[in-house]
Length: 624
Ligand code: SF4
Image (cartoon, rainbow, N blue to C red; front, side, top):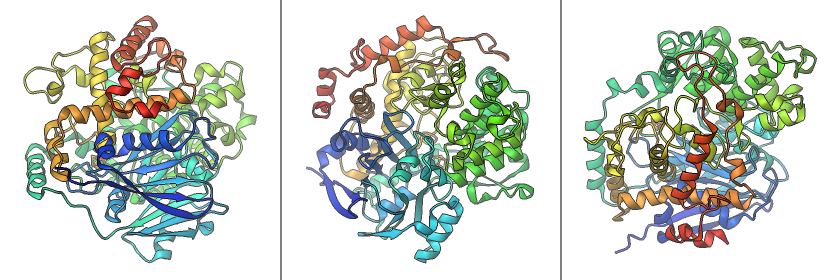
């Protein structure tokens, strides 16, 4: 018997200031679950190809899921999606925190935004009441001032605020969106989409948290997770993602000086361990999450406060080793500036490292920087550059375009220092030492993305005796430096897992294989909440559907296999460290890419999902 579960979406037209409600039918909901898959479904349905990402016709979707806002750790994540101003293709970015669960408590599963407001505006959603409110006083303010101001204005400290920053208002192509100052939709420049719509913020307050259909069944899974999870030994709780600094340094793949090197002489100084022993004041968390992996830091002499959280691994590496900066306190300040301007810390650090390499080669001069000495390791120069990029001032206007466009404008061979895929800057992981990641970077619909699938060291641990990925038939250990058909299969299968997580709103740091929540119990939890009888097979199909719909979006925008490539530097040897000289062999890479296309049911010549694949996934109408 059908449980009757539907999703309730709030459609908002900023041009006309009208709203309407859509009920997503149960069959559509079960095929997508929410998050990335349902957002991609809506973007393909509601937006024609070829729209200007910074124009009124771009559609910006915020989407929770069928389990968001319930009590299981990690189920607070939700998706933002639109056409990306950075890549011109599919833009999707997940955030944790508090906003998604609050939206569900207000009775909404998602918000779909069109048009452009004539003046700055913010939305105030209180249960089923939706108000358009004047955001002029907040335009041009840093994120903390906006958060405090809206809380004061509405007189409700328990509501949750989602906002774009000054960078988004000014059209920085890698501007982010943040909720509660600390939880970011970092990638794809979706903050610039929000800014172009003159939508400063969405404040939400709800009074009816969702409940499970089978409360005892849901409780059983909560108890099971508590028994399996051990905070005392969990590296995510103890050190956060910042544990990655020393781990990757030891492996010879800590991205250093714009990916020239794999080893950084000041790695220890900027590590999660040093952070814990010096500036860490607390561990933060997201809604109902026992893992509490977030950092909160304080550096009084630099004005760094825990209000904005603290640096994750990606921020430490992108503004640290990638720029040659070994000063942890300054990195905490830089991280706070990213939060205040609401910038993607990966792209921002990467564009500054690109500028430093251009400076070294005389392509960018001191005259062009307005007197800033962009020598590797100059932390104060990085601080100054963040201000300029955040405000899009001086050289910040050029760098705010991202490395691909900036290199094209600079010329003089700057392209060879612009490390990106499809226009999105490389995250802080080096595929030369974990070769499966080369597929993730090249094939992700959003451009280079490190959260596309687990990384190769996890494949090295596959075994037949109860490994959490054994339920997918992944039971043989794979060498991180190999890129063969077995590696393609491991990537292809685990990519579906992480795409399913992005659809059901599960945090990768809670779910298997990174942490204790295995796939079987997750399916049981979804069923307990929804009343369905979903299988693991069906959940994996949701992940595949998400990938395929995003691929279709890009095909429709004119992307081809020519866009599924790596920057040249990754085909050259690493400059130093434990893997000195290691590279991604181009022949191996293109052979693996072809194997992936065939495995995924994509035409090897055009990269387009075949009619049969679309029919198998039940999304054939999405191609029309
Ligand atoms: S593991 Fe960390 S990021 Fe994930 S939901 Fe929990 S606190 Fe948030």
